[in-house]
Length: 202
Image (cartoon, rainbow, N blue to C red; front, side, top):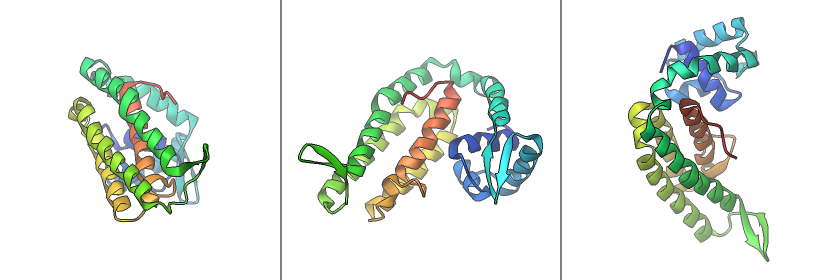
């Protein structure tokens, strides 16, 4: 990763609205570096602050857009990484989106209804499938992980969420209030899109 200032701005694009602790958790940054970077960002106008939380500003996004091509030049020109991203987008990412929908709703009389999670077997099946997809994702993204080990941290955080879901903490599948499987997956997707210079399909 580059200097703490750009790294912190980058993390703000992944979490939208975050405090220092939340930003530190994304890429295991040094808390003091993050605090200093945020102070500079607010002063520069590249971030906005309110009640202890921060969000990136249009100026911050512009600064990153200018920095990314040089920052990730090697990754963006690598054919193996491009192929890995194609496989990710057409395969495991679509599967996670589908499984998240299946987790949040069930089909009753041909219509989708909110999942009340009373059917343990149904929920367990989805959690097992998410585990299989996660294993495949690590293999698919191997070329990108080799170039950018930061990607592996997201996979570790997703695995942690999955373990908690397997232990009965069902919010760790898709809740937006915590670092659930789906929440961290979304962050990882945004992270690798910014590395590779691609746009989000959905």
